[in-house]
Image (tube, rainbow, N blue to C red; front, side, top):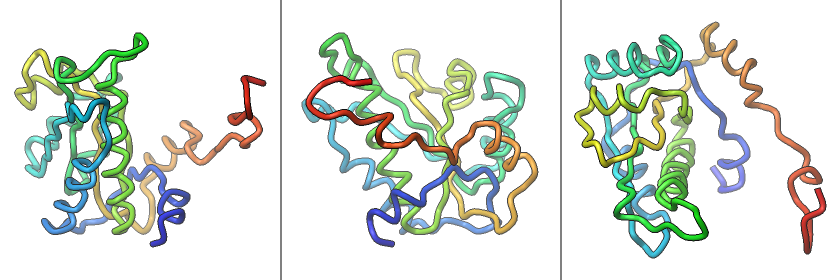
Length: 186
């Protein structure tokens, strides 16, 4: 795909086909994250790749903020958890840059995956304590986000349709509502 097409067609995928992701493509996705910019080049991010059915099922059943809201992730061939060590990062202008840096790296991974036809879904509605427990993540490390990765299913499952509609994930604000020139005009 062309670069702008990748960006403009990417969407959250919550229904996955029964198709594996090759190690070659996974490496390209992970390298895209590694290539991301970070504040003072601290590269505070760390990524956990989960392929094991048992661990995926534990995450799907026990990681949600509300019940089993993340149940759909069990169907993805891979789940990637984006973590960061705040102590290996910088705080500037009262802003914790581990969050920004990890988000940039994770987004680059998602866009690279989409370039290969692999969908993802940025998850923030998770219980960090439970995710840390399931994956043996040390206390000082923060779980910033997680996402299933997989080829989209041809026909979306009912749950995926409902959540997409509820979240309004296809809606985008007009540029006039998000961009001003020279100074704040909103």
